[in-house]
Structures are given as structure tokens and as C-alpha cells.
Image (cartoon, rainbow, N blue to C red; front, side, top):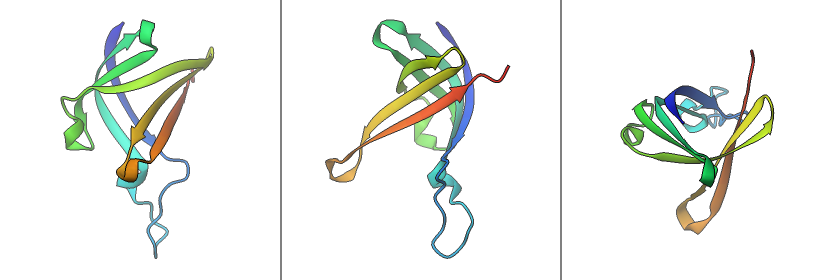
Length: 98
């Protein structure tokens, strides 16, 4: 399956600046749009951003694992290795509204 995607995600915990109560948007938000491809056999969806908050995403393949939690919930997840070799797992839950 292939199609178009547009989305933005904001961290519920929201990173706050040290002396202000203003969110540091770039650290707690991600937004991009482009095309997607579902690879059902691997449980993966590949997002191919054409426009993104982070310029290095444009033209890249952003591979996410996916699973359905229920009829109206889709969970996308990503494991990413960061500095020091420490692994973090990110999950986004999408819920159908209509």
C-alpha cells in the first residue's frame, strides 16, 4: 500500500526551557509530510518526507514499525541509538476520530 502522509507529533511530556515555561518546540515536536509505503510482511511503514521541520529528513526513508492496538488505534514505533550507545524507543499512538 502506498499513499500520502502529513502529520505532526508533540511530546506529552513537552520539554520546557530552564527558566521559562515556554515549550522548546523543536525538542518536543516533529512534523513532516510526503509519501508512505507499507511493508506488511515486515510490519514496517516507510515515510518519505518531501517537506519537514528537520531539513535532513527531506528525501530520506524514515522506517517505523507499526501495529494495531485496536480497530481505532495505530502505534508507530522507532528504536534509535543515540550518543553513548544508549538506546531509546519512541512510540506514537494514532487514534481514529471519525
